[in-house]
Length: 230
Length: 230
DNA sequence: CTTCGACATTTGGCATTCCAAATGCCAATA
DNA sequence: TATTGGCATTTGGAATGCCAAATGTCGAAG
Image 1 (cartoon, rainbow over the protein chains, first blue to last red):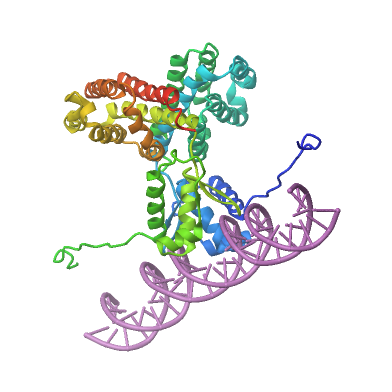
Image 2 (cartoon, helix red, strand yellow):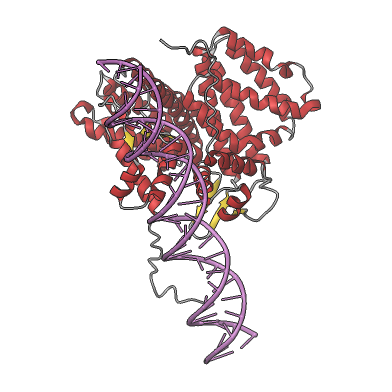
């Protein structure tokens, strides 16, 4: 027997390790940095970073190892650690991978998600039904990201979710700037609505195809208009 | 000017870092380990590993950090480092992700690969045209893996290739054992031949669909017959 | 015999130190 | 002036030492 039901064990504090803290700090610093503004490569100094963060080099190095794994930085022995500036081709490739994963998630969502979950799409994203997105592009950008994340979560597949979240980190910036070019926002919304309808109807093949084509459209768009990269 | 044409500069030696060596050693040890035989969790000891490998704890720790990132081990502070035993659901999820990525690669291959590359499939995998795979299952297992890697490489998308290679590490064992159950090998070969034909004909939608269904079939198979996991 | 707590041990996290390779500067030299 | 050789500096890689948390052990107390 146990008394555990007497106490609502708020339990663990378990504050993150310094490595995790350093990782968070560095990642947010990197993803918020305007990489494509300056032409020169950005170099990171282990010793300077550990001074600024107030910790030793060890947790910083471990954090950098993770970031290297994720493709954010590249470490050259005795040369330095550089923030990776992704080329247009690499971005397009990531969008292709994203499209593949998200379309599979849409298929799985049709099989696995509950009716309530599928119907919640319509209520969670009212922006898509209120036209004129050009007037609130910022809010819409957020909704856009959340929408795609929602589809992935409905797929209930851990592997797909974690791979996608990694890709999102790299592509987040692009998605939003792409929205502001041409008539992306309007057509994007139309496609979102079609996707929602397919999901609600549990038409797996259709939903899968619509999501894939939506992603491929973004890839084409970045490929033709993304010259400001590289 | 330079004399460099006088010497055939064999150039760079650049032997790998100890961290990389430790990583390779540990990964091969883990992937070759029969995880699902024993019921208890496998624990790794930093100090023992560094002794066995003849290096200090630092590169071992860095290698373990990478392996943790990739989902091979889990590190609990002051508890130990444990080899992760994936559940059946996780394996099935990875196969779903794999199917999504590979089917997108097939689509891209139809658009990007050269005629020679596409036709090389038929000559590179003669096993598929020689019937009776049951007689040489081991060789066929290798060909099976190589075939799917080949499709992915034909897609010419770095992001898809690197994500897939990670997934393959986790699923490699399963693919081969699944072949030996039921009539998987025969039907698998038929599907491979159909995929090759679709690729040769550059029928992107068809190739994409066939690859996806092939992968989904494996996922279903593991889901129903993979009770020996978890 | 059971329970409990003090203590030794184990273990990963972190800090510090040392090292070798690469680079840059600068003087010596042709 | 242009080039070269060496030395100081920088920088990541690796080794080592220390620490706190967690665990196991074992004996004393009930």
